[in-house]
Image 1 (cartoon, rainbow, N blue to C red):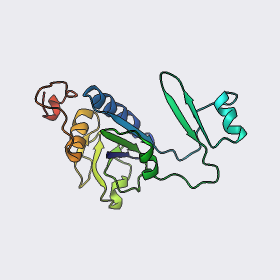
Image 2 (image 1 turned 45 degrees about the horizontal axis):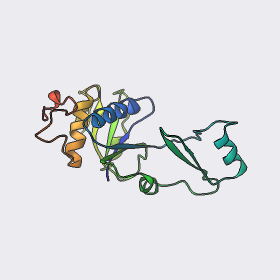
Image 3 (image 1 turned 30 degrees about the vertical axis):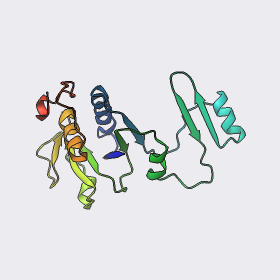
Image 4 (image 1 turned 135 degrees about the horizontal axis):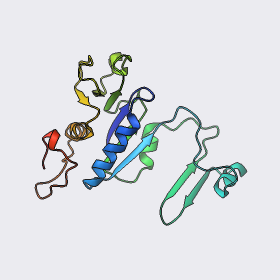
Length: 184
């Protein structure tokens, strides 16, 4: 499974970039999954709902399923937080996994920097950070700088880095790569 991380400080555009990358790659026919790390407690079901009541009663895992989607809720309780490898093992086979967060894991990452005045994470010398996506191309970095407002360019860089062919010669549905000089 090919993995790319998107990291950066809060409110720098990580989720917006991921949303655009997923939309573009899915429109190309790639199967994309995401993993989002949260630094806080979160809940996907709500007080009073059956699944919530099952968990509150002590169930270790609860699956909520319908014809449109299903979700597995695993209650960690006293367990150590699951690491990225454990979470990746839970995913169905896919072409690409985008990981938001997990800054200190060794997978390749793109740092998103919206405000050039912010000290970037990449300044810590982390060799797994392969590029910076930023709004200001005058932003000082020794890493490749990608235009944050041009997700097709970021997408092409990632696909090239991970050796994923964006399209074959028989198709032109290639995520609007005209500005990125890929096949169109």
